[in-house]
Length: 107
Image 1 (cartoon, rainbow, N blue to C red):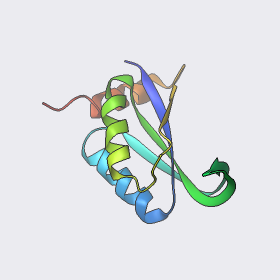
Image 2 (cartoon, one colour; image 1 turned 90 degrees about the vertical axis):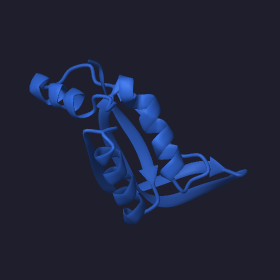
Image 3 (cartoon, helix red, strand yellow; image 1 turned 180 degrees about the vertical axis):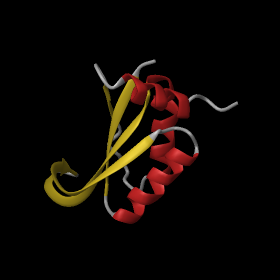
Image 4 (cartoon, rainbow, N blue to C red; image 1 turned 120 degrees about the vertical axis):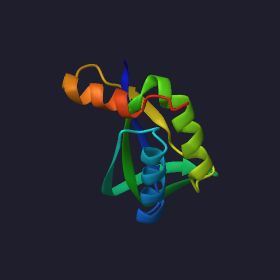
């Protein structure tokens, strides 16, 4: 089992709630934590922009990443949403086992 944490910035609480609930209910994520108060500075359409956002920290497995990423892109209002996965090198084994269990592919 290889756990990952997926970072995804969203514009507001409603989008955060919708994406988080969908990912968990569909078994694509074990847990989605929301971090409010983030400010992003970035280049888009030739200009520098600064926007208030929330950051989603999505806990899942490598095996579920492709499906999770596709689902985020389908639900997200941004033209180019941030969907970046970082491998979990170490963790509390019972927690990592729970992540694997609740995100196991449903057939």
